[in-house]
Length: 297
Image (cartoon, rainbow, N blue to C red; front, side, top):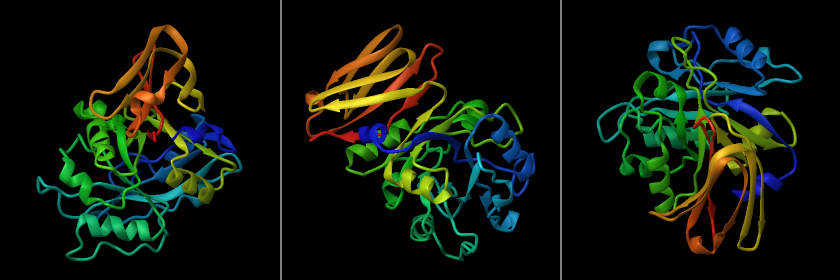
């Protein structure tokens, strides 16, 4: 969504998908929050696994908030079953602390709907990691977003990607955004590799949650998208030094500007008329940033 960059406020850096000793992470919640705060993050969601084996944790991190760092309450929800028969992994950011435990017979779609009804930002977590297909993506009909990069899945299984499912769902007409995360458990070098920059007027948790649901954020492994300006069919993008700036769309549709250290690109949107397009910046080190898709009339 190109209007993200002209929306009021500033960008706040945060991680939406992280684990602690409340489920299968190595560090306790206070230590996890401290590490992200000291690394320069503005906010964090501890999304421990909402499973009976861990006593259905909703990790309360409010005590670790400061004037310059805040937390969102959330969890990674699980219920039967994907088309491969595996438990769903559904990220829910912004849950109430009294969110009810998963009931017997509640499937993934119903659980996602209940989380959305409770006010959560619902994300389809690491789809490539466990083989989600289009039928799975379409089944989560209340999802706000797809996890397009997961750093732990890159480090531990070389399956970090959610772009294929994301693009398919966009082509099917779904209104979705894409987020990157660490999914850090601190068992390996799995932290600080993917995040979001959320445009908000304040660091208040509710303001961040509203901005996420509105799509007022971009995802990154490192590159910065500094501005996106639209004038009719003309688009001007400025970013940190990159090797390519791509406008990708439905099927094979794409436009690219490339060079050694390019930091600006101009695109004609008329080629995407009637379809969606999304901006991808690839830095000099191969790391990427992704702006949210735009449907061009």
